[in-house]
Length: 210
Figure (cartoon, rainbow, N blue to C red):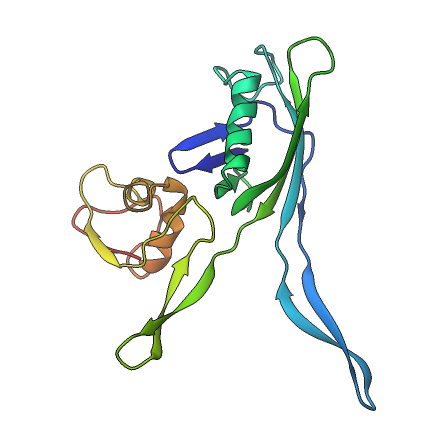
């Protein structure tokens, strides 16, 4: 389980005993003359999740890896991300969970004199919006800009190409052009006619970088 913000990342030392993603449809109801109440689909609401676990002070068999940060290094990192309103990338490997989020709430405590810090972290999905761009020559809307409402994984709208060289991978290209390797699927989706296996790209290919 990971949280990433650009080049900064936090891998949770202890995987929570369970996790869930909450999602819902937006259904609006109206009263129509002679028909009565009707339901109208209004889109999909933002997904949310709540993570409860702890940051261990010492290494133990239940830890997912060694060399993890101290409990309060983890706390301070999450607190900083929340206070600055940064967009984060939330992923759980070997699942379909890979989405942009912001920290909705974060609480922590010590309760057993071991130095471990127990926490509950609430995350809310972040969705980018399309803002119309006005052509000043004729006052008509000519294109749209994909702009984030808050700081984080900024995406440039200009399309580029890249000639694959030795050592390149979709992850390294996403890291180079977007500042975040987890956005490799953007490049893969734009080049599906050429790339059959996202783990294999060949020297000399010219890839579109959307």
